[in-house]
Image (cartoon, rainbow, N blue to C red; front, side, top):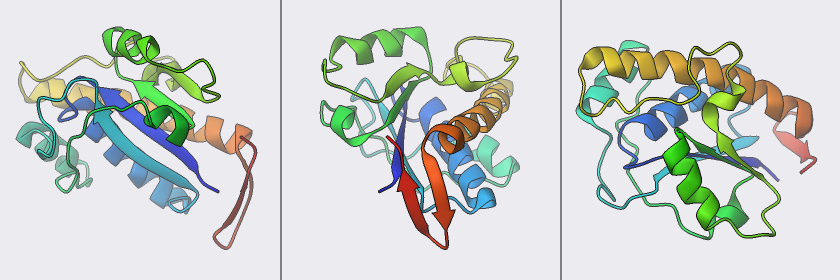
Length: 170
């Protein structure tokens, strides 16, 4: 059984695919890519099946991360039964997620930057209407949060990782 993490923003073409790409790379560095599964989604459906924004792809590529193969999708009610962590990039998307979170959801639905120690902000700002510096700033923030999220998953869920076999405590 794997731990499953869903990154969520509004349209799923900037922040959440960037967060997913950074976290996947971190998992690979740690040899945990089979123990933790990731996905990203948007609370809105405007960009379903579209690739991430070209500026997000370029910013991630500058740090050696390829997010070009990701495709946008919209959050569904089933995500609450599939994922252990549902991580919103900002308060508005967290409010939307909480509005259809079932009472029996046993995972964690919170802001992604809750995992970033000493982050200068509480929310990952939407870079869509800005320039390249906004996308670089998003990368800085999601990299900080990736470190904290990975530590949380290792502490709370990964009891044993031994040659691909994973025991989880969820």
